[in-house]
Each structure stands twice: as structure tokens, then as C-alpha cells.
Length: 491
Ligand SMILES: Nc1ncnc2c1ncn2[C@@H]1O[C@H](COP(=O)(O)OP(=O)(O)OP(=O)(O)O)[C@@H](O)[C@H]1O
Ligand SMILES: [Mg+2]
Image (cartoon, rainbow, N blue to C red; front, side, top):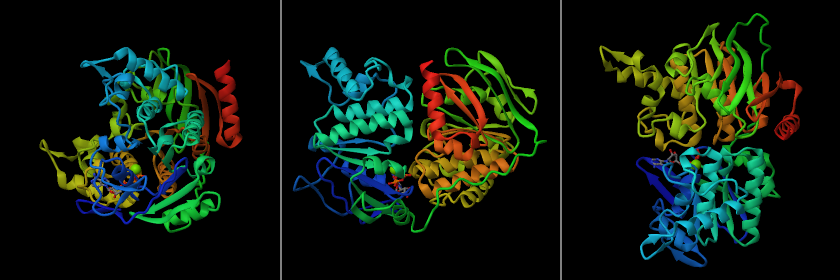
């Protein structure tokens, strides 16, 4: 398979074969061509060259409907569910169950309930609007929609990126049920440890080429996979943390912060140079805490101080002025203006700095963006490239660059490495540590407990909107966190 976009060779010759009932993992760094490859199978992109053979016959897949008709369903990386519609409406969008022109709503609801139960989520109601759901639950809707068709192959593009430990277990359970029924799964992930748990064979892409095609998981050590992906040896180590000087000033102070029924009594402080991590499961209130500190949600009690000065509740403008920056969990819907070029996205929060007598000074905007592109090794290194056409890891770097340019004192990072490959991950970890060392106060939320523990100086274990424990990261391991969370949730 080959496929070019204006000026970019996304696929330069990729081979992939998938067998019934197997989990075929597709690996590769950000921008390697994984999503492009699967989109040619899903009928989203037409390949320039190459053949697709389906059940022994050569086929052309002109559009997504044709893919579904063949029995190929896809869960996209960018969760393409429609926020304004209900769960049931999303699932039956495009193949409404109609009789005499009327959609049978009750039947759609019944089948939706059935699908949600099969996915272990019978608590979700078919009538809930999808816009109200968390990213993890949107993923469930996307999967339910895939399973609402009669399929032989399901493609999952980084499904675990939005899931926490428990949700991933649930996902794997579903995957095993599917493969037991003879359905093939193509599974894309950046979390290499997952491959050992569910993968059968692996195809590794690098720069649009397959470096390995269908090699067995069992015979391939992780170091070999990383070498195939990156062309070098990468150790997934966290940068060493220098001890924080005892006289480092308190930058961020959060006291007894509460938000309606979502969380309460949240208190912590962050000193210059310190990284504080919030560990817990999806739905524990971690993201809501960050959003409230940032003023995007209005606290119902408590206070947030930056440099000793209290912030106005519910005012993002005030928070940003005081030096707080937030890199949100869902970068595509909350953070990036996808149609705009990199340089606009990078300078978005600092607009006034680039305005001369009311006109935006594009030249300085581009110049600043170019410096960040070099510093963060953004690929492709072109400030005029629309954010939309960048891979996930590179989009994440744009968000970080934005706050670097703006100049912050407090950085709130929600899932900073979601969808970021092993190589870029290590770079982002180092970058976050450098930002701390430069005197910033950093708060990080991640579903990967290992990441919180590896990166943070201090950890807050959060469950059900409460801080269960605050302690130095060196004094707890992943097991300890999960133990606390389970007990805390049961209580
Ligand atoms: N619609 C598009 N227009 C232009 N270039 C594109 C488009 N879609 C993808 N690309 C480019 O094609 C290359 C492969 O991108 P792709 O999204 O397939 O990577 P990926 O392996 O899925 O990465 P990630 O792990 O970040 O999701 C990248 O250089 C990307 O910038
Ligand atoms: Mg992708």
C-alpha cells in the first residue's frame, strides 16, 4: 500500500495480513502511518497503489459504507461520535432501523442496551446525550457502534489511550470474546506492555514502511520492537528529579476546593520546581480538579492562590493572567484549533503580544513557532502546516509549546502523553522536568499510574472526588495506589 497527501508520503509500501480470530497489533511512532493505513481499509482514504484482498478476493473500498458492508468496522483515534445525539442515535446513525419510514426508537434502544451490556456498561442509558459522556464512555459508544454491524474485522486505533487500568481490563475482555468468535482485531497502541497481554502478531511501521510484518508476539522482545519502531535504542526512563530546595516558594495553593457533587475538600500546594501528580481512576474527579483550578469550572467552596494571591472563582481570564496554563485531556476538542496552522495554535494564548497597532504580526508569530518546533522536535517542522494533519504526539507538543511561549508559572497537564509514542514520550517527560527545574509549579494527571509515579515528586491519590492520601512519589508503587483506590471507592 502507498498513499501520499499533498507533499507527504504517509505510506511508502506497507504489507499487512490479518487472520480470523487473531489480535494483530500495529506499532509505530507518531506519524509512522498507522492511522492512514487503517483508514485505507475503512474506506476513508483511497490508496495510491497497492491491493486489498478480502476473504481471497481483490476488493476496492471506495467509502466507509462499503467497508461496513464487507464486514470491516473501525473505531477511530479521534472518536468520531456526534455530541448532540444520544447513545442510541449514534449507534444507529446511517443504518437506522426503520419500518415504513419511521425509525423504531424502542427497538434501537433495546439493541443499544444489549450492546452496552455486552461491553460491560449496562449503567449507560441509550438516551443519554453523547456530549455528556467522558472520553472513555465515548469510546464505548464507538465500540458499540462497530459491533452493531455484522463484522469479521474490527480495527481499533489506540482504544486504550482514553482508558484507565480498569477500563483497559474490560476492553481486553471484550477483545477476547470477539476473537473467540473468530472475529479479527487490528489493534493500534503506544503502550507496549499491552501487546504481551492480548497480541498474537505484530506489524511495525516506520516512516510509512513496514519494518516487520506479522511477527509473533511471543518471539519478539520489547527492546527489539522499540528498535524496529525508532531505529535506535530508547530507554523509557523518567528524568531524575533534583531535590526541591527547602526555601523554594509556594507557587500554587489549593485549599478545601470543592465543586458540587464532583469533588470536595481538595487541598494541596505546589512549590516552584515541584511536580505534583494526581493518581486515580477515570471518573475520580482528577480532570475536574484541574479544570476548577484553571477557572473553567466555578468552585462551590475553597480557594486557589497563585503566588499568595487568591484567584477569582470561575475566571479563566484571571487564572491565565496569574500565570496558569492548562493542557487539556481532549486536545482535539478542547485545545487545538485544528484547521489553523501550527504557528497560530502555538501563539494562541499570547495573541496580544503579537498584535501591533491592532494587526497580528504573523512574522514574529511564525518565528516564535519555529523556535518551539526546533526545541520540541515537532514533525513536520513547518509552522504553516494545519494542526489537523499532525500526528497525535506532535499535536501534544503544540499544546506544550503554546504555554512555553505564553510563559506560565503553573502548568496543569491533563494526560500529557496520551497517544504519544515511546520516543516522543521520553522527550516530553524530559521537557516537563525541565519546565519544573526552570521554576514552574506543575500538576499532572495521567491514567497511567506508572507515569504519575515516575514523573511526580509528590502524589495525591484521588478516588470519588476525595484526596485519599498525599505522599512523596518515592514512597508508593502502582500496586499501593490501586490498593488505596479500591479501598477508598468501596468505603
Ligand atoms: N489528511 C492529511 N493530510 C496531510 N497529511 C496527513 C493527513 N493525514 C495524515 N497525514 C500525515 O501522514 C503521516 C502519517 O500520519 P498518521 O496519522 O497515519 O500517523 P500515525 O502512525 O497514526 O501517528 P499517531 O501515533 O500520532 O496517531 C504524518 O506525517 C501525517 O502528518
Ligand atoms: Mg494515528
